[in-house]
Length: 379
Ligand code: CAA
Image (cartoon, rainbow, N blue to C red):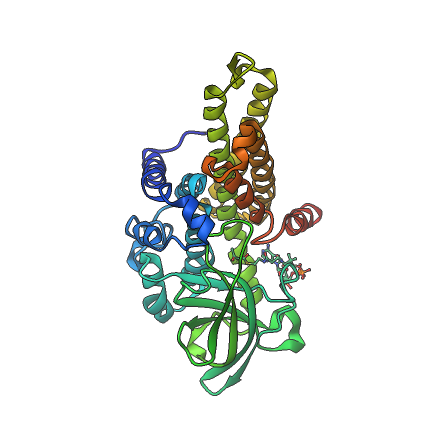
């Protein structure tokens, strides 16, 4: 067993760390306060190749492995989880499935633009009444000649208004349950496709989360990904990989908060010495660091399994479950270490604490991860 990162991995990690400090950190508090999407920063991330990291270079991707991707996600998420979720959705939930299951025509037309970061993508599964219960899709697509007519509403869609290309999951044959679900590529601007209200959120406030409405949208049959009825499996497989990205995001949020708490504890004095010299703080730091390291091992293991071509559905659910709980625990403790300063925006940890919460909810709640894990155990 080799725990060492390669030269290439270290270079990606260093590039992401540098970018986060120089380009994401300035203005991150203001973007959070104003719920402002990091548009210019995402453009820079596209230039650095962060939006299609694992896509083959023949489709404008970086041709990197999943370990590189989680290293970059971790570093960016230490500073700005709103920027990193846009990246995660584009890489894991949009590019991955298009490359694996898209037709050559779809890859030429859509994947190349998505992988280069020329445009952003969105993954549209959740609905007002189908969040965790993803098989209960109400959005429907009926075939009429060479087109499908798409009707329905999607909720909480990341990159909702900033994306140009949307992967939309819809029922094509309700009588078949989840085996009657399909996935379609839909372009912004098509008649009947309306971007709905922007959500005013607790955390990741800079990310762009919207509802989407589809009314008699004409989708070419050539824009269906895979066979009719393949959409649910497609969505589940996509989420298996997506959960590795979100686990890395949670890890980054935790590590970012820990690094701030560690630095602060060495500067802040109380009772005549730095608070890092008090055992009450030392024990907190020890617990935070231990939990982060355990989460890191789960995240890297899931990424490694994916790179080896092994089954990673179980490992990705474990990584997301654990890393998101660590993100929540560690950020709460980081605020505590900062005392009153931790409660104000200037010190960053309160934002990280708010951002941590979503990692226990999106791409499957912690309860869903437990279902996936326990089903794997009992199989
Ligand atoms: N990987 C591959 N296939 C899977 C799978 C997985 N993790 N989980 C289920 N499936 C397959 C099953 O094998 C089954 O296929 P067959 O019928 O061919 O055997 C099919 O899917 C249906 O599975 P179940 O009978 O288990 O379905 P269920 O309704 O009991 O439960 C679930 C499935 C695991 C709870 C699933 O609905 C689920 O994962 N829900 C959570 C959805 C989710 O994560 N939503 C997040 C939205 S996206 C998002 O957040 C993006 C963003 O903006 C950041």
